[in-house]
Length: 147
Image 1 (tube, rainbow, N blue to C red):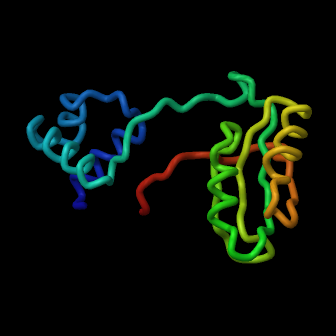
Image 2 (cartoon, one colour; image 1 turned 90 degrees about the horizontal axis):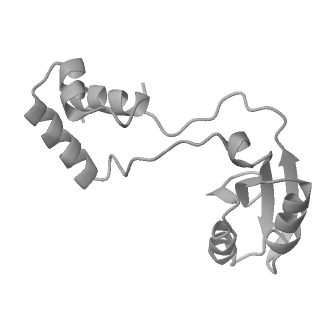
C-alpha cells in the first residue's frame, strides 16, 4: 500500500458510500486510478467489505458485556466456534493473561443476558467465566489504518 491507497481508504473509512468520482476528486487522482486501486485492494483482502454501522442502543441492544473465559485444555477452538455462532456475540478473541478467551457480546436486557450466560457461556468445556457489564462506551470503532 502506498500513500494514494491510504488516502483512498481514509475517504472510505469516513464514508464508505463515497462515489469513486468523489474519491478521485478528494485524492486528486484519476477516476480510473481510484477504480483500479479499490478493485485491487478488494481482491487482495485489504478491503474486506462495506457495511452499515448501527447504533446498538437504538436497535434494542441495551447491554454490552465483556466476558473472560477459562476453557478446558485442548477445547479452545471448539468452544470458541460454538460461542461465536450466537447472534449476541460480536467478538471472540484468544488472549494472554488470566483467561483463555475474551468475548464481546450484546444483550437486549437482563433476561437476555441471563440466557446468554446460562445457555452459551456455561457450555461443557467452559471452566470459568467472568462477565463485566459495560457502563459507558468511551470509544468504539472498526479497524483503521495505523498512523
